[in-house]
Image (cartoon, rainbow, N blue to C red; front, side, top):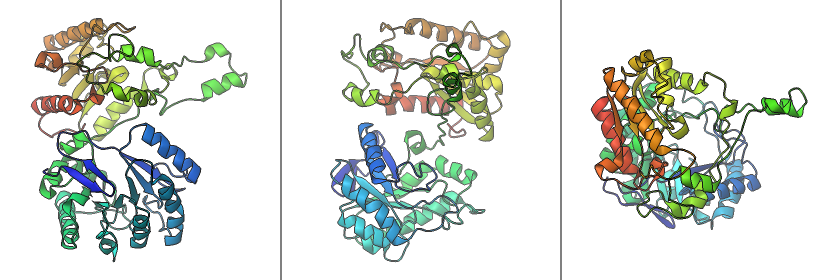
Length: 467
């Protein structure tokens, strides 16, 4: 892609290849959206959520006033305006570009008067007057593909060739916008995952995002592996406070049903502890000279730390079965885990290796080199395995990273002895220094991701598996 920036109203957003992906935070001021409907329906709740997203480092805030989940009835013009305009005016000076998710030309015009920076149209600016409504503005424009309308779009969507048809639609709409005098530097594209598409259609588009980017030569709303042509699923780990939390075990103590001693452990790392464990520097507040983690953002990073509730997780760990089932459902997947869940791909393959086409353990807290039986090692030897660690393993912390690294070396040796394809990748061996435990958040994360993708392409087969 040759485009260096996306002109987005008052902002110019860098989109050239090699830079980190920009993060769009979603702010639905609706009672019925499929993701967060009802959570930010009032102005006060919406602003609180926006403030949190800004603190977390979001690049763009996308405001939506009308749910477009499958089967939903259309919203009136007046009601949509009443939902979104107060939020736009309240956030106009927040320092971040504001995007409005709407397909109504009248709403677009009102939002542009309020200096919204982007119009994100699920209808691809097909409505009568939509292109006219935005052509004379400076706003960025996201052109999305959708087959049908939200009310009916998931009722047996059909394509002869979904990638070609979406590509042709986007080319047509972008052409119409350019003909209206809209500069290409204002345009980005969205294939519309889940909008009039089956799972198979979505996967085909995910595998061909590079083709869409290259053909249209425009930025695409997606993440790094997706932009490289690999479909990506991000499961939520049970036991890390985001999902699978059983409040009942604590409520039972409060209700006197069970004694306090029955409560499972819960803990959260302090900033000082995390600094050492994540290997940001030799002592708290002092980064390594070659440190790749953006320590200037450490305060924002600390706000994302969540409690560890793994003590509430039953045995066997349900994450293993869930990952194995997902890989089988996808008809083959490269399963990747990091840190506490770094060994999950290995244990998922031991549940059932049928769907696991590759196993990647990034900074695992051990590889069970002396725990796995010979039979388990024989099973793991049937799947390509990659283990990766960052730098500065001798950083003092309650985790002995040097011993953990040695444990994984011994595991790799056992798998190889059983006839398997296993590799331990350590970037310093390649002259790449300074990576932290949070290696996929480091400043050179694209370089690290390319190492992983190169391994996948060499050992699993180029673009034959989902990630």
